[in-house]
Length: 605
Image 1 (cartoon, rainbow, N blue to C red):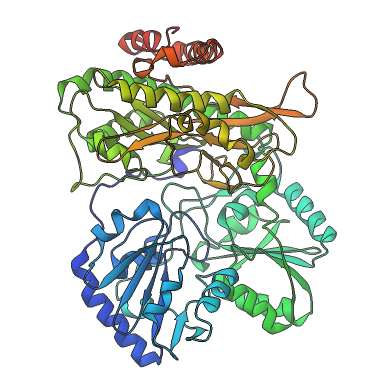
Image 2 (cartoon, rainbow, N blue to C red; image 1 turned 30 degrees about the vertical axis):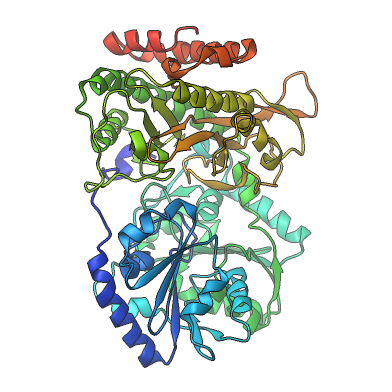
């Protein structure tokens, strides 16, 4: 695969995509469509059929109707009122993007019982079964039990969206063995062994990261993540079928998939599911991610459902030697770009002219100097001063803020290189910091070091070690309200399961897992602090049955913000060793003022 296979694209847009003025006419149009369809309320999720963090423009139905552009949420549109349910990340963003005179914003993880407010007693709530999982529909049905019925329906938002963009069909590229480390044929053989053990006659795959990993393919169907959107059916015996948009199926694709899978149109999927059911087969689906339409079609046709976690998630998270080599290369390239950027930032920030957008565009420019960098892995979080306290802040032309000297700058960013995926956060000084800021910065750093240096027995989960990162903040009566880490894909999604570091992650770590390590502290209205490296799980040398971490990220940590009196000798030794490694691995690849800056930034504490 070459960089030229992927057309150049601007990594990030800063336009304000939401237009609250469009909410009223679109709600009116949707309610007219509801009346014509004979339903009283309609569900609009943020998700598409593939449950991706990013969705194609034509799948952004929640944003189209409500104006809300966050990555998670759901709306319920009733005959007179509408409710928008978002989690704690979006309690500020959602009201700012929608028309709050017509849409009531609720903070809730999933759907709360308040859904009853928007569905008339004895009425009907309709939903698109391709956009909800069976578990979600069961939850909603339980909350409306005795109040209203829940029924599948064609998508009414599509009916009122006259210029809805079509489905993406980007070029499909296949990874060589030096990149994938394992052939698609071998991966299919492993998957079929899992099916035999269940036992199941076939598996239906709906997650693009699973399908792309299984067939060693990548695309550009969504922003930030090199996905090909499609579905796959893999039988225990016989040829797999890959369901894609029909316009991307050609002789080149057939040759690339020869002996592995037959390409077919997405339109053929329902009939194929029904055929599996008519044969009375046992079919494995993931009830947490598969569309309810898949489960309903299989069940109605007579299939026996084997409801288990997507069997690709575990193997995909265990990066092999080739994938890890690519990740190390991506972090070396990212370290070079970040050294150039941070040198530039230190020179420009004291002038008092930098804006949040200027910071993002400068970082993108430095990353683009490496031709194998094809995209950002997510929209950069560039938070100056008080904006740094907004955990998932996205700068727009409307919110762009000038960074004043002396304020903290929080920058959380990542890139997609052809060799791998990166994600890094640094909090930077622009002048003297307060004693409180130094205290909080150092406690966050101590937590990050505690995770980095941890050794733990096989079977340990992210839920068990999460406290290591929080303990130093807890000692002073403060904390942060997000996970300490998430899994990261190898030239795939920057957020991937099933492992991570937070109370909700109960899957044990295994060698090859790549995870972020990012404790933080946020003082609303004043500043935010987060320090993040990516780390990989490995077997602990000389300690059989134990695991530890290797740090992948190679970027200096701003020592000007540290209160050295709070660090132990072991923590100082870890930080000095880390900076010595950054200098050794990145120093030879930079010159001039950047090299001088890097040498100073990595000097022993």
